[in-house]
Length: 202
Image 1 (cartoon, rainbow, N blue to C red):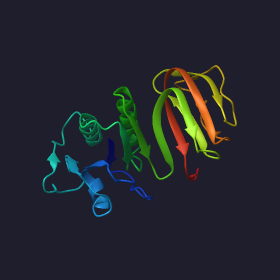
Image 2: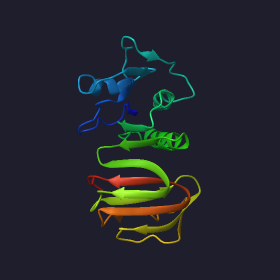
Image 3: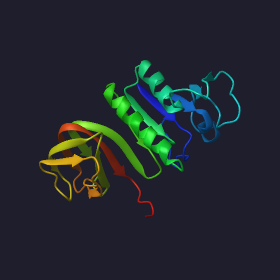
């Protein structure tokens, strides 16, 4: 079952494929989602939206979980194992960092969550990681936690062989996918995988 989480960050510019998905809209994301995407559940503390929508799942603003964590848990308990997250980026880098943790939380519970910003698709992976249909895209890899060991890769501009990506290092940033069928073999640890769809300004 597919699930979608709409967060209160930067509105996503592209199309959101919501057909057949269970959609949870968090708090202020309702401003740019209503009328554009079908919404099954409106959830959160609604401190950003400024009012409580009808039939919403309301949580206290002073809580130990973010609205994104609440939405992820709701989808996982419904049996969703393929989850797209929109609105996770934008002007609050602390929220972006927190939203990246949702990807790992889903991974730990056996689901694949992908966060789509206006520039990049981000997910967590381990073991054999296929990279299909990404030729020409920039690919960056970062360890979740202290480190992740890459055994080998195929189809990348800068080959990765017997390489440990360690916390505190930028090694793994800005590779390029050069084949339509590329892959990375992560022998230990878990990776954040960043696929850049569109180059922003740096």
